[in-house]
Length: 223
Image (tube, rainbow, N blue to C red; front, side, top):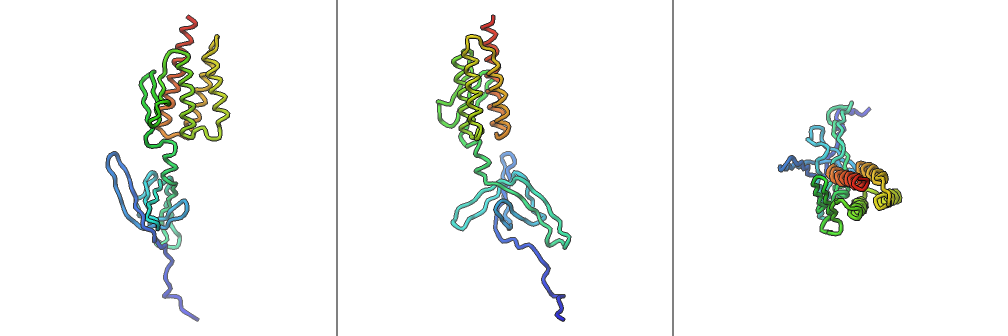
């Protein structure tokens, strides 16, 4: 009988060089290590300092650098010994994380006077005012921003309906602001489903100011 006392114990072979990047305030920490990289996850040694939100840089064979964002981290302890203990982290491409908030998007919020601008497109700059025509412009501008940022993807028909209802309400001879309220509720729900914290804050502020100005305008007409 052949003795197996000299066989190699199983172990994980980390063979892909990666760089872990962690940004804290204005500081950036970079740490090189080896990993096992799969399609949507990577495996690193159990003692690796890796957290959700960290950035992973990986040099590809064509010389380009792939960048991922860590979305979840799980530590596994093997029942077969420490060599198989490891940390598994899921990731997604950094481009997907920033698809809703592209570099160059600018959100300026000033109390009830709200200005939103995307990139250098001045046609997307909106100021909440006190006239029906200005409020119509704001309604259309908020809708356009949702489409530009892909936040209404798959819900274009619903967005069109609430947008037109809000415009019809504010331009009616007997406005009630109910259409604007429904538009506000729909926009806030939509942006919270898919927007980053900055986008949620900016568009919610714009929608809140729109609703406030619509009700103020309604009261002025009633008076």
